[in-house]
Amino acid sequence: MKLITTSEMQTEKAGSDFAGKLRRGDVVAMYGDLGAGKTAFVRGMAKGLGIKDMVSSPTFTIVNEYLGEIPLFHFDMYRLSGSDELFEIGWEDYLERGGICAVEWSENVSDTFEPDTITVDIKKLSDSEREITITFPEGRCVEK
Image 1: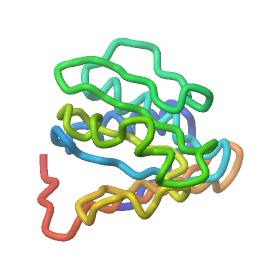
Image 2: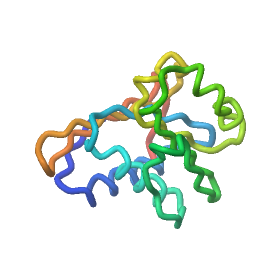
Image 3: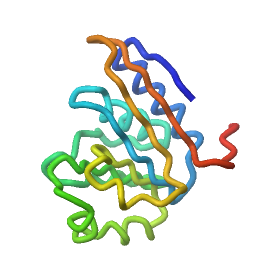
Image 4: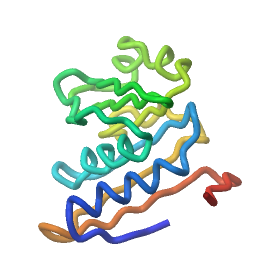
């Protein structure tokens, strides 16, 4: 699934719409350059999940937790050197909690993800335009 957004607000809306297709326990591996809009997309995901908290990038904290009916765990792997560090911060514990794990800078820990991981690739086309490519695992029905 591919879409183009032309503002940060549209990128958030895309994230909100996307959240309606998610299930407890989903892992969303996010890819995109610095400033591509990954955090804006996650802000939208939180809204779509009914989370009222202000969402910010967890660059320095590694993970931010947003509690709602379905919790959202927002990871930023920018500062990690590999998967070993992800497991040291309790990755498996987050997976077992039944929330949704949204992982920015997934390329730094790509060997961690299972085949059922959803990918979101955000490309910056211009100062305001983004191309968002969402890939669900083969066989996953996403009609909602």
